[in-house]
Image 1 (cartoon, each protein chain N blue to C red):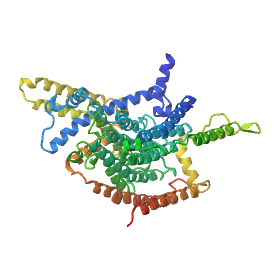
Image 2: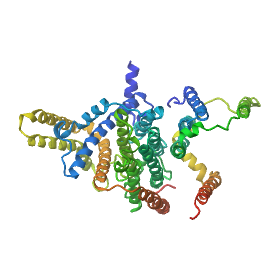
Image 3: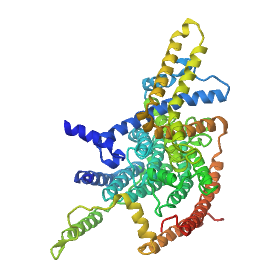
Image 4: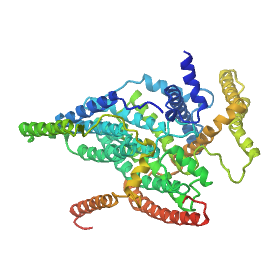
Length: 177
Length: 430
């Protein structure tokens, strides 16, 4: 058996990339730079999924978010005048509320991470030996298996919601269909 | 030292890809080999495209640099590297700088999973085909940012066209791919996304997926073959760089080395999508006619083909050596062509050695099939007029997408029936 590729070094590297990318997204004045930073963050997140032995989720993340949604984002951003948008007064100066919310969320994470019930934490240390080579098939079994397929209904409802959103967008955009 | 040699040799006995065996040394070797091979392929493609296109238009094409213009790609590369590298004054410098690298990175990274043979791939991923589609879809980001960062009208319009086109055709492409993935689940009950697994599924099913459930496999291949031309922005779908309207589209403002990166990425993306098509429909590394012409004699005959092909190319070279003008000015060119032919002949002879023959056969068949697609690309460019943008969108959304959806449903129905039939005969999985 090979030693795991996913050493803590990679986790910290990816986490730093994600945090720096996330900060850049909200601090850049130029919307295209923000979008590029967001793409970096999303790609680092995909790599984190790989570290969790979930290649299928990582692949879907790259295709849908980095390759699909972000292209449409850029598509829209490119059509607005960047110079004028950069000069406009920003009306999102709510530092206090933002910091309070972030601190509350961070406190919550720390609280959950350190909570012990009967001497056990919620996130015990140790290595997962998960069948990486069968990840796609395992997800398919969770969705569609006759016996264990528990998430089929939720999955279909989610796709129906998306369909409704698409139809709604078309109806709102076009007077005559 | 001894352990190191053991480590290197241990892989040779295993029957895995370097990635699966976890052998870093051989993985590096494979990555370098793929990179060098790809670069040579792009150089060769550059020369071939000019020559073939020229002959289609009853011209000679490059004839001056080297015999029959064989050294033209090298002359071009030197010219590009020596050119002044201009960044427009009003451009967004950082984004302008990073855009070509995004495109090149996306175009080269996909070759990590391309299976040149059952063990001749850098690695085999559980999500192989998904990885290829995902990473190659990242190249559109580079094109969009390149067009925007140039801060100029033509590049911006080119980038907009390109992103709209690539996003639309990705949908039809994905549907065609899913129909193939369904076919892989027929024999074993579980399908696979792994590139090697897909070819092995074709091997066990006894036919390439292009012939599976005739004509469903063929239609899927047809959809993919159209969508892949649009994905790579090639004629007749080369609207993002339509010369008559947009000068050079998204890379109008690029020059020198940066421009050559776009060029490199375009050709390696063409090779990448062609290798997806070859892997999914044309049996990847499998040799042609495995059912009709089987047995050890035919295996031997087909294993001689790689060497014979190179000898054939060498023969063409020598034929042209004889036809060269006898004027003293052509002396060096004649000698050069003879040397080139000799090298090709030597490669051909090496390929007859039994040990080499067994190992390069699969790589040869894969490369030969991809080369067929490369020729098709040039042929399209030489013969089809360019589409109009509304026609392009109509084609993508109103023809290919419904066809893809219908194909998906039909494949599912037919596959279910075939599966039931196999179960009744007691052949399939329980």
